[in-house]
Length: 356
Image (cartoon, rainbow, N blue to C red; front, top):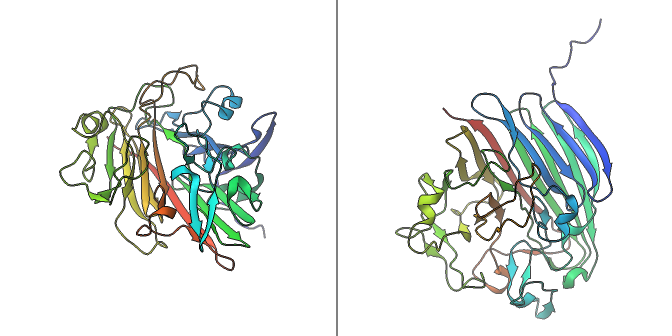
């Protein structure tokens, strides 16, 4: 007797070589989500999802020429590390020992892991395919001294599409010496479609009672502040254009939002992004304590996107789940220290749907 047919309708991951991207992996579910991931930078290069009428579009920004990820589009869709966000002057102390990281910003700060961070590396990849999930598992070894960080660090990142229209990012890392770890994905989203204009008419909700004030160099300038009565109160849905017009927003966000405390093990909602024009809705769930919101106010049309549109200010929005900027130098912030025998674990899920 033959077994019953499998209800699984997902597309097994397909791998194609690419001279710069390394490997291009494509996977998903017919009628639902389909993703494209590149092994250079463990990079989410594309994500197709239907609108309220059932028409799918790619909602992730990426350059037409993948080689541009080495320059002006460096972080588009990439896994960034060892330390996402900024460390002031690239300096920190761990167990009483000072460390100096490579720095690439004009003001001398370290950003997203340094001059040669994880976004520049070719990761090893293998396919994952089950009745409920399909995608890739990526691996990277970061050697002792890499960009100034101590310890040999072994990192894994999985990017899996679920049959319930979810994209799940799972991160793990182990080390042989005390070090810092803070990983995230740096995709830019436009729920109207990549290259379809700006995101100013999108509605944004962020479930954060506090935010991190920063100076002109985007380094934290003091204690966390309550969002109530400020430009950073996004606890109710608000058009991004309206939010950015508030006094204190200065025309754009590039700020860490401090989510409500929790156990760092359980997924909880961090944000919701909604595009009234197409009905697409993206819910962000994470185990991380913070969410960096960047509205791409510095985009100036330099990057030519996948469909031939130059990306101007507000062409997309990044919602980066992570620990806080410069937390190694801020003892009151959640620790990013990983020690031998321990395991770094982080999970973020993007849940998609539509509204009328």
